[in-house]
Length: 89
Figure 1 (cartoon, rainbow, N blue to C red):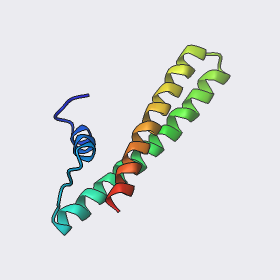
Figure 2 (cartoon, rainbow, N blue to C red; figure 1 turned 90 degrees about the horizontal axis):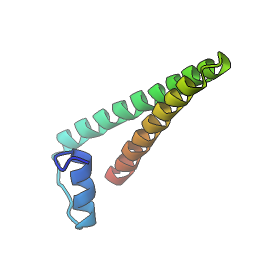
Figure 3 (cartoon, rainbow, N blue to C red; figure 1 turned 135 degrees about the vertical axis):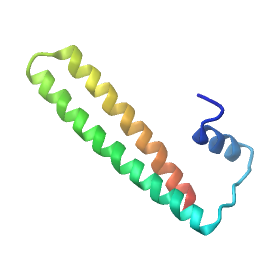
Figure 4 (cartoon, rainbow, N blue to C red; figure 1 turned 180 degrees about the vertical axis):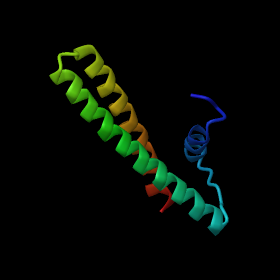
């Protein structure tokens, strides 16, 4: 993971017991963006799993697995964002 990644930095700060103070307007904007990202990732995961099922039904098993893997990846990212939102609350 890239050390410049904000999620990586947030996790590092949490491990070190550091917290970041945001202006209320910045905090609200951040929360809104995180909620939007969460919704998009969850929607993406739903679409990918539907495509995976369609591919499996059509006999394209390897392609189905690739879509399933992408869906799982999106779900994992969504879960990370959900955890950040809980931590912000």
